[in-house]
Length: 217
Image (tube, rainbow, N blue to C red; front, side, top):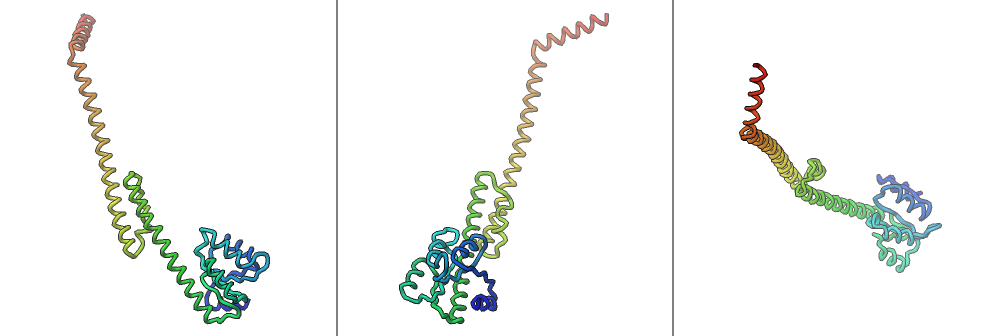
């Protein structure tokens, strides 16, 4: 509890787990930036918690600092080898813990930025494929275009170009549709002309006129 209060005074939001199993349940239910892990815990020790975290693709990049009374070198090597960011023996120096926390959180922040950057690059790639397939949506690059960096500039340029291509495609489709209507109308007019100019039609027309003349007489 003293550690929890100390971290809260530093401006961190802290959630406390009573044992390893509860810690995993909390990680499943919420979002966290860092784990401070004790080795000696009931129900499930810190080694097993660390192993489960690092075997999960969704949580393997979550930084873990081990704080334990087990300060043997073998324990330190084991934890670091399993993927822990750092190992601090008890009793720990508060200033050292603060420095290690800051370094781990900064590393995670940079990692999150990298992941976000790669995801948004994927958005641009997907948009290019959508343009080629004729399935581009105008708002698909809004997130990328909102960035203030070079990727955002690329997103805005690509978005504008893609919209222009889409607009031209729609205009061409409209022109083709109008041309088809004109062709259909011309075809129908030609068919009517061919019928009215045929000998058969002229014969029918003469008979009709003869019948009309006979009816009047």
